[in-house]
Length: 316
Image 1 (cartoon, rainbow, N blue to C red):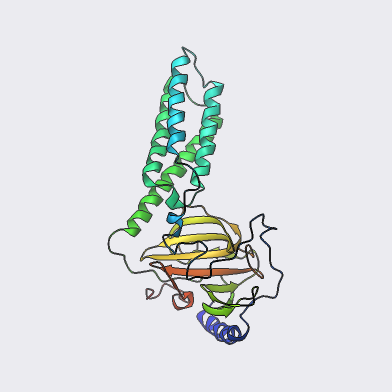
Image 2: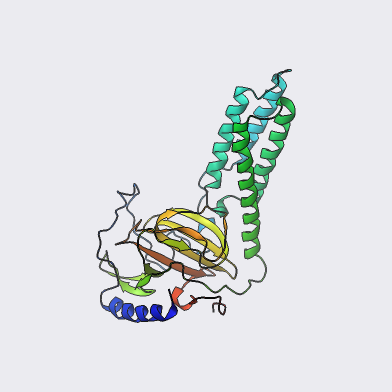
């Protein structure tokens, strides 16, 4: 969407939002329909959860226990299996079952937000995968194709997550570089609600709106506003399906009410790379993208930080 059309739409929406709040007059998707508990978004100057960005995901309790115990148990049992195998060659059924269970556990671990998979744990997971497979290969011979097709891609994913964790940690250390200019996350979209105080279209009460609503057809691609790393991709009450991306310069962007998510925590993304598709999940009156920008833990007006096309000057 070009800047000229954006400014025109902004002016119209600003006048309307002051009186009524810009909204689509469409039926709301309920949390019951989504299989979730019906909860209100936070009204204080904070994102969908209690702690402000960009620390909010890291401050949440881990989605499960440390993966170390699962890795330790697998390694201990694998040593016993190899000692009891005698002269037998070929992967025994109990070894294959154990590898399948470990792979499922690691898949669940990688589904957590990036800050909930610590760098040190990821290093131990990768070392265990590679070391235990090498010891099993020496003892039993080459693994079946089905096991290789499962474990080799999983090892690559853990290695990629490890690199992502190192990169995000580097973003948080030292002097923060200039924040990147942000590009429009949706093409051919209209502005339906501005950043600031507005009359909530569902609650019919004046509330602070911490983002910019971009009206677009359901299923329209949503792209990353700048290069960065996906740190969260999943459900957030009130905001529906949400993706959070960490950028240089202490900047965080959020993309909410998605119909579908097409990325995972730990993914490196470039400008415009698809993150999901426009939808109306969570507390929404119709298909649109709720786009938030946070810098150093404070919400910012996205409209003031978006560029109109080619990369422009850095955000203030």
